[in-house]
Image (tube, rainbow, N blue to C red; front, side):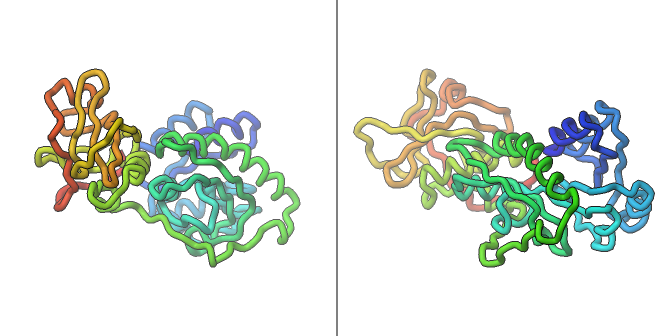
Length: 312
């Protein structure tokens, strides 16, 4: 779905030949399909086992100048790279070689990065390793969640792609530059342990970062309340007058005006703004009205067997 602003722009400038989705239908690529139909663009879907058959044949028939890739789940065979006149180029939401892999936005926000960006690079045999065409740095704003930042990246990508295509017009080899392998880091798909809150070891800021990294795509950061998994979707740091040290995870204040405040380590505190449970999605104020009170505790998950991590 992050390709949709680019689709709108280049379709309006009559530069977009067709839209392709690789893989089974899901909540993201169905939006791309709907957008293609709205823009009266040809749309094709190919499965993984069709990459070297139907997809290859279709590419050969179409003879595009360039193929732009947003978040492809499959490794595209290298023998396809030479079919487009100018090749395959991937739009990656980090400043490569930092955060190579499937989930760069999640890890950048979880790790508290203040700067990220967009890299457009020529595709190679290994994921996110090809030479760079263009990069664009972007600020990650304090408190910005996965969805908000990804949305900004997708809109900003339009201009970056446009500048990249200008560079490709009459391409010379020195317009691409190799990535510096000394700066490599990785961003695999997060496991269930990557999205759980550890009240005892994580600071208030680290918990806020984790919550923002999981909202909305992973449905919130996981904690345990009264023996059941809770997903926390939004928090903010607060300061209390004359604070007292509490065991991390303890609810220290609860009322229907201000909601719920919870203690973190080092005498820091978070306001719980939005949570999701099996009963629904609730504000902190709603939780207070339901009887969650000071002295109750959020606990660090110990055993999360049966909890599945998937895109929300």
